[in-house]
Amino acid sequence: MAEAALEAHGGGGAHPETSTGLPHPKLAMWLFLASDCLLFGALITTYVLYRGRSVTGPYPADVFDIPYTSVSSFVLLASSLTMALGVNAISRGDEGRMRVWLLTTAMLGTVFIGGQVYEFTTFFTEHGLSLQRNLFGSTFYVLTGFHGAHVTIGILMLLSLVAISLARRFPTPDHHQPVELVGLYWHFVDIVWIVIFTVVYLIPTPNPPGA
Amino acid sequence: MAERIHGDVARAGEAPAPRRRRGAHPTPGDYVRIAVILGLVTAAEVAVYYLEAVRPILVPLLFLFSFLKFTLVVLWFMHLRFDSRTYARFFVMGLAGAVTLYVVVLLSFGVFGR
Image 1 (cartoon, chains in turn red, blue):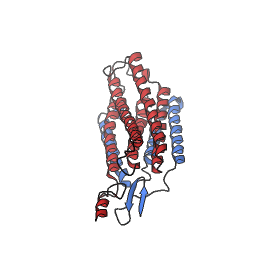
Image 2 (image 1 turned 45 degrees about the vertical axis):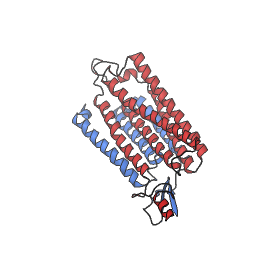
Image 3 (image 1 turned 30 degrees about the vertical axis):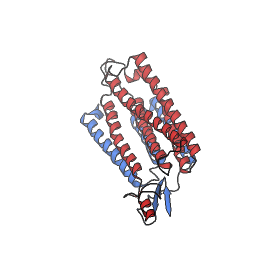
Image 4 (image 1 turned 45 degrees about the horizontal axis):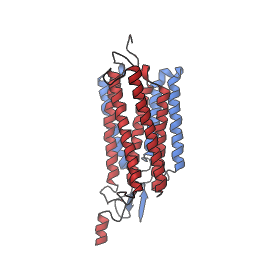
């Protein structure tokens, strides 16, 4: 009887028995990511809608430094690799190696955010591109700023996981699940950047006539 | 007997376990190979940006590269290739909804004709 009660509350497994046979936190994370597609879809659509419609400069071609942003993209892609290796390590029960990979991922994410801060600072101080300057400034800063905020939250989650691991306070008997959930979030942030890099940076924006 | 696939556990006689599709769980080597491919595709993206010869097909080419990278990350790093199809349905539902909605918005504003 007691065993059955324990089973019913998930005491005997990695997660409570669910109607779907799948862990609900993971389903919830996928649902959250699906909803985040709508958020970033709205921001990317707004950027595309106002492309080439700024009546005053600076324009994208004046400020973008493609080689610099390409390096940032490589850094974020590399962080997805280290995240996947972290999830792989904990799935094999190697918590020490997981901590190393999660810290590496957090470090690469910090490098990416540092690059974004430098980019924003350069755009503002050298080109005078502010949030209010023109349509390009408004849509660009809001889109990339939201993405940067997501990366920052991801870094905090990674560092929290490392701290939880060091304190041996994982909330579930299966340490794999929280790491996997944060991993899904991190990879999602990476795929959003894949789209932003193409749509915002690489697809050329024509300057308005007379610019 | 518990079967474990990416941390999801199901016992015999209980709710169906997510199916393992197309081979084994990815190894660290698989992840490194995928990352190398992603790096090469990104390098190709940046290279075509500077090539005058491909200017007429630049936008479709960039979208193709972007789609390829997106798919590789979702299938391999996010494990959708190996996990239960239910997760894929949840994600594709949101993604397809977002793409449909915003393509309609862009069409309504005549963005593609500009």
